[in-house]
Amino acid sequence: MAAHFGRRLRKGAATTAVAAAAVAALSASQAPGATGDDHGRQATAGASAPVPDPTGDDATGNSPYYTDLPPLNSPNPSPSPSAGTPVAQGAAEAGIPATVLDAYKKAEAELRASKPGCNLPWQLLAAIGKVESGQARGGEVDASGTTLRPILGPVLDGNGFALIKDTDHGAYDGNAQYDQAVGPMQFIPSTWAWAGRDGNGDGKKDPNNIYDAALAAGHYLCRGDRDLSQAADLHGAILGYNNSQDYLNTVLSWMEYYSKGTYSVPDGTGAAPGHRSDDGTPRTTPATPAEPANPHQGEPGSKDQGGRPSPSPTPSKPGGGQDGGDPAPRPPGTPDPTTPTPTPTPTPTPTDTVDHLENAGTATAELTATAGDAFTGTISTRAETKAGAAVAKVRIRFTISGDTDATFTGGEDVATVATDSKGVAKAPALQAGEKTGDFKVTATVVGRSLKGVDYQATVTERPADTLTAATNGDTTLTCTPGGAFADQVQLKATYKGAVADKVAATATLIKSATDATENDKGPYFKDATTGKAVRTLTGLKTDAKGLLTLPKLYADDTTGTFLLRVTTPGGGTLTVQLTVAADGTATASPSPSPSASATS
Image (cartoon, rainbow, N blue to C red; front, side):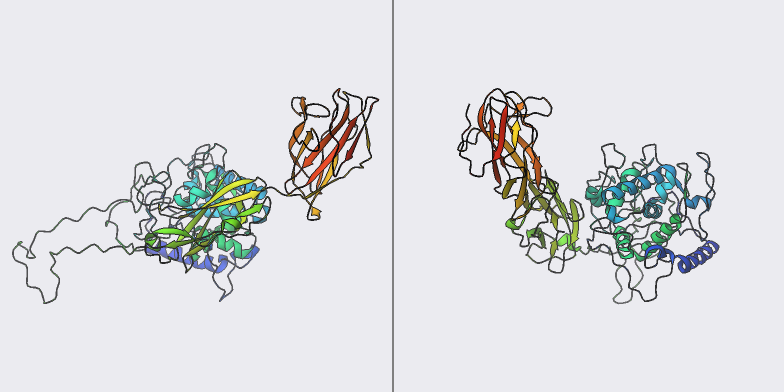
């Protein structure tokens, strides 16, 4: 989290005592519970702590967050003040700025439609928005939901915070050296790159827009097959957002508070939190003493907390005496104060030691699946040093690209997995969609610009090996030359004896049993748009029962016997014989072993 509201509140002894009492009371009455509506009750003593998202790809980079807890009393409805009028503390806690609240509810509605099994409540988004940015700084957003000023977290340079080197070339956070969490839901750029969504329909994915950020947060929380009505999944999702038990407790407290009742207040009038998780936490390199906070933090061109370079110390004159003369004698073994202290070399992270990625045994033959089916093969990637040693605890991002609708289990096209002790990361199972063709899965190291590993995969068409006529083969189709056949041809598709649904089929009026090219005379279909004669139909599909009813057939002025052939992937073939008679009768019958030629 790292929205900054200007000066950090300084807590005196009295304030500290009051805050401590409030926290103690809330801890007793609103600590996260185990299930469902018990989120605000004390957890059972000795219960194991929830574990974070196993993907290891947290949304915020474990940035600081606001630790303010909700009031002890349940929220009560309060009249909304006029725009620009501050809301009284207490009443404002239950009030959420109108645009921000609208974004949360719209995100909930979209997830209810796209991932109904996730059961995402908007109150969870509101709780996260509260602790991450104080509801976008109390609703400082424009009519489209974009923050009036950028909300940036501390520089994640390892100096008291996580170390995440730049992944977006400063595109989102303006920092080309290190990443910073961005926007009202505080996504780090590397996570936004795949989790970002367009929530307001303007064609852009902007982490500084509350509609985009709220929808992205919803999809992030609903990854995989999570059901957020279950405590374990809920806790895992929140810890995946920011891996801290205190963070989990704080979010659950606000979620319960908002669940008891809330209301909208005008944008810009919401209550701003005052205490952050990094208040009073010593940094590796202390900030400049007594330096006032930058009142323009978060504005373009400014440096947020942790981003200002500390002034260099004034070099001292040689010599240790007061008059600058010879130094005073030093006890034996005491370091010379004039000798500069060497800057310690930072310990490289596991990610820093990765030299390349390798395919960890994925066979190309295993990456083919029929439309609608799950892939049997698993994509595995190994992270290695230059010497070929395995590197554990490295985040590997798997990204699907290509013109298909294949996804990972859960419906996402990006997944991030940490390598195990053998340096191997296994992507989630692939699920084929209905769109056939080739696609690619690329594995890359999060936070590094190393060459990725590509895996080619294919989605093939659903097959049918047998086609049979579903209508009586002796049915007489009555028409005169230039008229229409009274009945439509219907067939049934099976594959290995089972119903073959959603199977693509092609129907063609062919010249003869030995010449499958399209006939240029005789019966025909009509183009649905132009009404012109069409003698080949593609894009046909069997229904859930494996049935396919062809469009109505028409006859031109040519009399004789003609052949209609229907084929499917997998070898299914059915040939129907059509006879147009001058006396006004025509027949259509299946011809399993067609031998008749079209005549005129």
